[in-house]
Image (cartoon, rainbow over all chains, first blue to last red; front, side):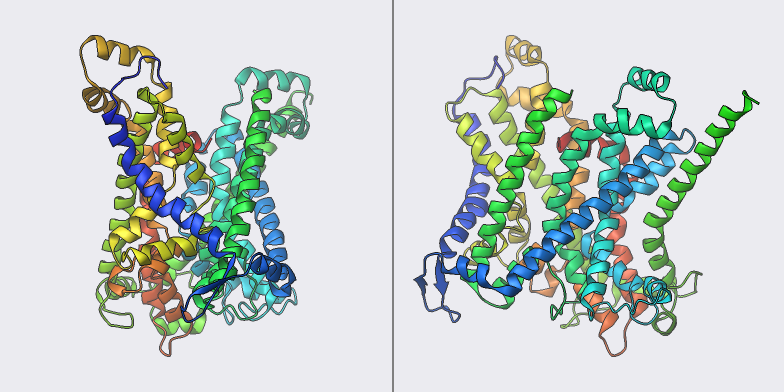
Length: 293
Length: 289
């Protein structure tokens, strides 16, 4: 708040009102409703609901399929985060090195940011096509009978690759801006101290990039958990069957196709807690970041 | 010998840098580009041979069909209609979000309010839970309000997250204190200060946020999928599912048309990001931190 702020009362209230109303109607009401209905068992035909306590949660914990999806989500997020971060970091370091064509490379490496996840999934369908997709043929030359939408591991591989591809630009932009904010004096000092480029990277550049990397870690986990919905939906072509899926997809499936309101709400609440934990973790990292800079 | 070796090593390093960057650029460029090239062939060729690497002669015809041929279950939607809906969602979301969040940020930063801290926390809690997490209850709320298959139901719930407010708050905090002091001495009221000084000062920030929000709105998938069941409200990205199905399952798959429609779905946000990339990068790296 500014020291020399205005003292009118009605104006700030009027200014805040639209935002607060939208939040109340489309955020607090639904979120509260989700928590509440996670403790109820809804009649599938809409005739009332019964209070069942934590049954919806214990059901999930005992549900083998749910636990398997949870496990897939963990592996999927880890793979997507790892590969998109490391490829983007490599490209950013190289783009920061070169003098000629730096701007062209930046444009070429970041424009995919604008492509929607389901469109990326659709491109995946072209490249992993059963009969003549280039990547399917590529895998087959290595003796892997790749079958998108039929074989669990094939579909999972396609999902990871499409999700990594889509996320590289964001990571690239942040890493590049992180690299460019390293002071010239520091680089020159490092140049004198350490003649090996690899040594310089791990001993000087990487620690200076650590705050950016921590921040991106959270961003990428959140992306893998929530924003890849479109990629997953496109790649399984709307037929969940035996295909791998993430927890968010399961919420959608149970809530909208299975009409299991209680179970879906309980899943939502679990995800909310997960995101809250991630955010707390992030805030602690940001606190720590102050010591770095 | 001692003089040439370091120079030579540097040159090799440069070559390897460029090689890696070119490979990276190909990785990012190839999939959409090949899809575009394939969209210039007729359905039979694509169906039989898959992705094409050389241009065919059907590009115009496929895009023509994608834009103007009525399709879908009810035979009433064409690409033009979906393009319009995408624009309404993208622009409506971006403009709505900017107006609402600038107002809220102005109130929080420039006024002495007793409940400012409470409002601040109420708004910023929304940063914690993305729409995907509370998708089912949000849908229920929209349904009870009777807002399914309306632009309001499509756009407004997406605005219920504080990213924009947070961004403008940060920016307003960095505006020098003297500015508002000078304005007050000159007798400018809060409304005049906001419209005549603060808004013009935020022009670059508004542009950056507009680009990010437009792309975000245009690319929405899950929410439009739930809220719009009436095909006349379909956006291009929402229609991707139909494109996928017509590409994989239909008896006579319209491959060329499906590809052309997918290209149209990516073109506007891609062009905006490329042309305004300096603003866009600035907005992205400064707003998310």
